[in-house]
Image: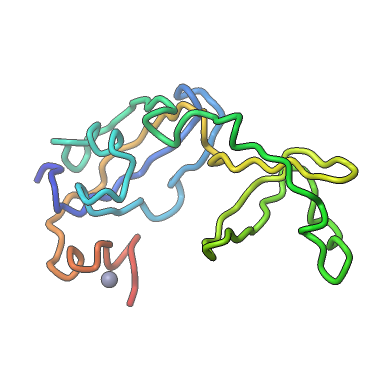
Length: 168
Ligand SMILES: [Zn+2]
């Protein structure tokens, strides 16, 4: 069976930055393979395109440029935020504003999102709202473990059930 829309695909993969020898981002080695329903937008489109027509046992190695993955780094998405908005009862919680920390924030519409502390001044904090992987070219190596038909219930839910998927 080959990878096509509405198949459940399980893959082992290692994600590195730029090339196969680049910095390790994540890997499924030693864990359950990643399982997803192909063709419903669950994955980066180029990732699915690269797997089209493969079958269990096939190996893959391909790069996806940043602009096709998590986007280019946007300098204008780094903004100055007054420190005092982080105060709780007149005091900034210890350890909250450390470089690299992810801050949970809420906009006027109540949407939750995260920004990373990029730098801290006396009065303000530079918060970086870029995706952590923005500007990073991705490289995937791995192999296809299994390809099977999605069950109608999985298609209705939009996710995989069983090993590597939802249990409910
Ligand atoms: Zn479900």
